[in-house]
Image 1 (cartoon, rainbow, N blue to C red):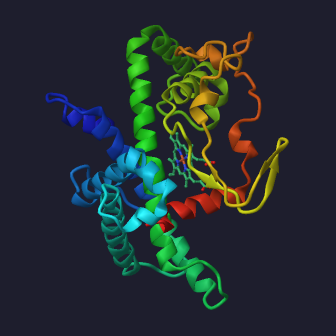
Image 2 (image 1 turned 120 degrees about the vertical axis):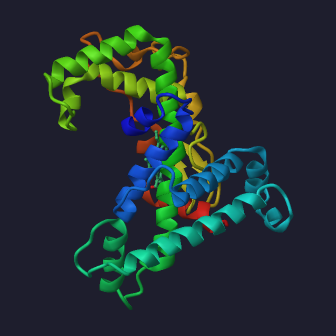
Image 3 (image 1 turned 30 degrees about the vertical axis):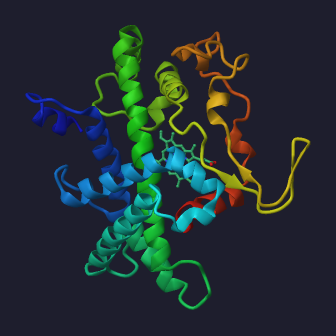
Length: 293
Ligand code: HEM
């Protein structure tokens, strides 16, 4: 990202494009084992398709579709999202086929190789590991991680630009902990409570996925005294949790103190919505998103 900024320093930069490309590329590296050039057509096409899908998913027509899936075949604006999923599937399928040409069984270079090894190992045991699933998984990871990370980073930059004192305090903490080291390790973060609180606060204020991802009960369920029948659509209102009065010291302003206690350590929070969700629920929801196309 720094190289990219450097190359463009004389021109104008759209930070959103920059963040999309870098977030996309990191996930792409995990899946396919290499980074794309920022001008690469595959990267540009996939980002374009995925961001358009996200816009449609978050728009009013997606709500209409969720309420009445029977409308799937009508020529309404969400058809564009279906078309984009098909186009993305073709690009990803080509990438996987290309990958197979240089693959050595048992020597995985990335997630695709590992998954292909697993398909080989489980051949004929009736498992759900197969190439179609691999295409969906790759799409899901790129889709779930690109827009979300990019939009959160945009929010971080916006609030840090407009709160130079907070930015300065993070810089001081990072400089003190790193003592001249060029890169921070994952463990270093434990010594940076203020910076961590800023990151959490950015995520809170950004509320990047305000209604989370829709879930559906797979059986009649009792939760905290409520009876929820099988097949109920559950829409978690994360935005309300993130701004709930009484839960946050400053629910409506950007303030890292929301995540710090009196000793300036990270505050422990009450269990979040995430811990209330069972893994099967989450997985089923995730499959539903793509299977509905
Ligand atoms: C700031 C960035 C991100 C935000 C705000 C975010 C937010 C969310 C939310 C709210 C959910 C729904 C959780 C639930 O329903 O229980 C979710 C699920 C998911 N996210 Fe993220 N996410 C981010 C980054 C990423 C990245 C980088 C990846 C992958 C590379 C990713 C992959 C996924 C996947 C695969 C799921 C579905 C999980 C499952 O079905 O078990 N997300 N994310």
